[in-house]
Length: 191
Image (cartoon, rainbow, N blue to C red):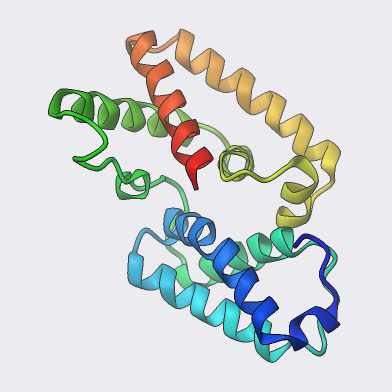
């Protein structure tokens, strides 16, 4: 359900479908900004309530990009001056069922290292990488961040170069870093 106009939300079932399709990934994204489950739920509740209440006035071309941009703006607004930097470990949801104890320790350490490396990136680049991991395409990221697609491509290239530089010049085990990157990609692919 990518192309949505005002008429699409007159149907409650279509609205519920949009909610069910996007809530989980939006929750993870908002939680990575606000770092609190309840606050993330509040942000998304307000977002979807406003979407429903404003359904007659909105002209939405790409619902996914619209939701991510709205979620980002609402999350940053809810922080009131707090930083929107690091991805919280709980967001990755490394459960006991998925790994044996040793694998879980390595997985958590790998994700922690990748987060540290990503936190060295400028805010825009970090956010672009995060949105890419959430499954958005360049044009959707551009709309979500209200920048051009060329700027997304440029910042993506620069972020990858920076991460590569940080990885090569860090004291971390390269296999651990690679494992963390793979784990993050797998987790976001399953969402």
